[in-house]
Image (cartoon, rainbow, N blue to C red):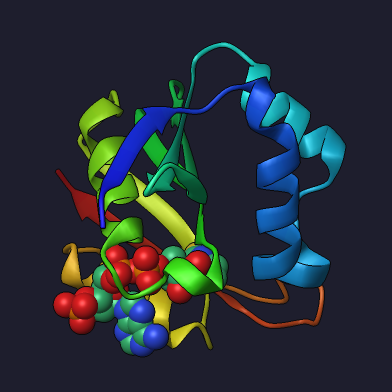
Length: 145
Ligand SMILES: CC(C)(COP(=O)(O)OP(=O)(O)OC[C@H]1O[C@@H](n2cnc3c(N)ncnc32)[C@H](O)[C@@H]1OP(=O)(O)O)[C@@H](O)C(=O)NCCC(=O)NCCS
């Protein structure tokens, strides 16, 4: 099994739209959100291919006022999970960020993602109440690269 990480672009819109729906349901980014995420300048976006098939996507951005980088999304299609795809996407994002302070938001109930981020050295710093559509809270995690 070969995992290849490549820069993503607007040409990946259809694949990423499908991935978002499968992974995030009511919290999925809309086609407008994704068009922006895949085409705006100064954004970091990577796709993962497994044996040449689209398997996952991650995006990040640098907030210049606060000097903090944010991982804004990371998702892997169910059939490609538990093979290191998210880890490879996270490695690629972290290597491209401008600031050593990195943050992300994760649903407090998302055990798989929280374990992934803890493994990478992210620590919980605060909770944002009612962040998700169903009222779930978000855990804000931070890492110093
Ligand atoms: C979370 C997610 C991105 C992980 O993707 P993945 O490619 O399966 O992750 P990896 O194979 O790189 O796993 C790396 C680590 O993550 C953790 N992890 C991944 N899946 C896990 C699971 N089902 N249960 C517990 N821990 C898990 C483990 O610590 C794992 O390391 P290990 O294999 O040494 O135990 C994937 O489950 C997903 O896309 N979920 C839906 C979207 C989502 O929730 N994204 C995060 C939004 S904040």
